[in-house]
Image 1 (cartoon, rainbow, N blue to C red):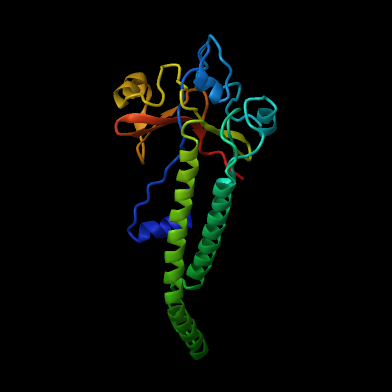
Image 2: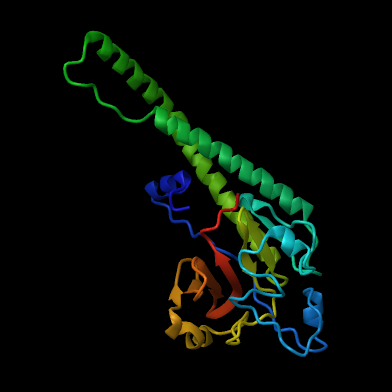
Length: 269
C-alpha cells in the first residue's frame, strides 16, 4: 500500500491523507437472554463469547472462506467487494446494500482507470537528457520528444488531479462501508482466507475492552503488552503467536469505537 503510485503523487503534492485502516465495531459479550447478542447473530449463552486471538464465534484467523460460510456464523451473501476482498455480515446482521455496493464498484473502477492512465503518462513524460556527442538526428528526435512532453504536461496535471479526487472518493467509500457495520461487525476474506474480523457492537476482548472503553482502560489492559498508537486514531497491538496479525482499536473522543483483529499482509485478491 505504501508503494501505491497514487499515494506517492498525493505526497508529492503536499497532501496528507488519513488512511483509515479497518474499521468497524466492537460489541458486547453474549450473555444469557441477551437481546443484543441475538440481534448480532449469536445465540444466548451463559458463557460470554470472547473476541480475541483465537477468533470469534468459531471463525479463526486465516480460515478458508468456504469453511467459514458453512460454519453457520455468517450470512451467505457478501456485503462488500471493495479492494478485491469479500466481506460478510455475522448471522443476523445487515442485508447487502445494493446501492452502496454498486457505488463502491463504480468508485473503485474509476480510481483504477485514472491511476493507470496517470502512471502511463508519467512514464511517457519522464525527463531525459540529450546524450553527449549526440548526432543531429538524435538531437532532432530528442527535441521532438521534449515538445511532446511539454504538450502532455497539461494533460498529465489534469489526470493526476482527477486520480487524486478518485482516490479520495475510494477512501470515502471504505469509510462508508465501515460505518455501515459499526454495530453489527463484519468479516473480510482475501485470497488466502480470513484476513479481518471486526467485532460486533457488544463484544469484548478477554481483558474486557470493547466499544465504549476509555483510552485509559485500553492502556491499562495492553500498554505493557506492546500497544502502540498508529495513524488515524488507531491503536495497534501485535497478536502473540500469530505473525502478521494485530488488534486494531479505533478511538474517537478518548473512547474505543471499533475493535478489529486483522492481518494487513494478506492480499485481497
